[in-house]
Length: 184
Length: 138
Figure 1 (cartoon, rainbow over the protein chains, first blue to last red):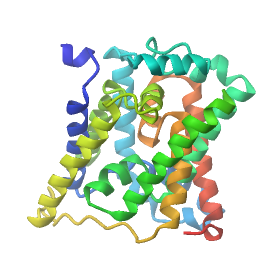
Figure 2 (figure 1 turned 90 degrees about the vertical axis):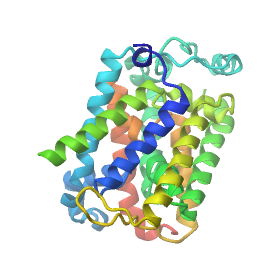
Figure 3 (figure 1 turned 180 degrees about the vertical axis):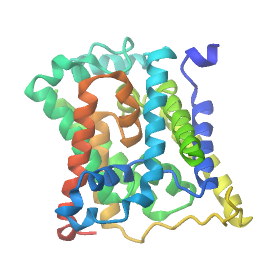
Figure 4 (figure 1 turned 45 degrees about the vertical axis):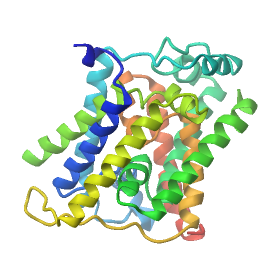
């Protein structure tokens, strides 16, 4: 029961993620999440305006089945498997306090950023929308995200994936260390 | 239907991992970019190391998938500019929103409206890439 209710350690979660990647390969598919965003744009009719979305998306519908499962799994884990509040290193807690984030160690997501109250402010709304926008734009530009490049691509020893992952870290470090002090 | 159930189950399993290991938590991503915890590096690192071993084995043994077809993993297109620029833009968003595409979907289960805004943002970003694709250096 402990395994169900407490935080899964890295040496459990990491191998389980590779296991799902292998299962997808054995199903004749691949592990990649961001391509679903393109499929969704195409289903929504984006192909009428932009050629990039005119593709045979029916071939990729299988990946939306995975997404449906991910959403259901998240719902189950968040509602019934007592999601834990990440317990962070003390120094990180203090750094977050300096940014005005005090919900650390008590919630799964910071209420200062994800609550409805914050979403209804211009700044709160902009942070979430721009964050999502950069992820969507960057993932398609780089041709993959954490699953497609960091996990699948590096597992297959792809140099392009290594370049992309280095980019992910440059971007993340710039955001957290240089831009956060300006916006928070 | 069988295919739907199998793929849905893989997703379900993945969704539970994302929550129970906390990789879908904004806090864990922030902590990772502060280099203050091994947790995220352990998860990504062990997934990659094990992934390399199994992928290499599948390729060298010319393993077949469940339907009997040989598993072929398409190599990524060669290049540099698109990977580094796209990667940096993605990383900026990953650091800000604390979620990459998988965790975005998994967080729908929080029922927070902000997650829907996050996903709409990601769809808009994907759409704008499609619009600008021919004008961007790749």
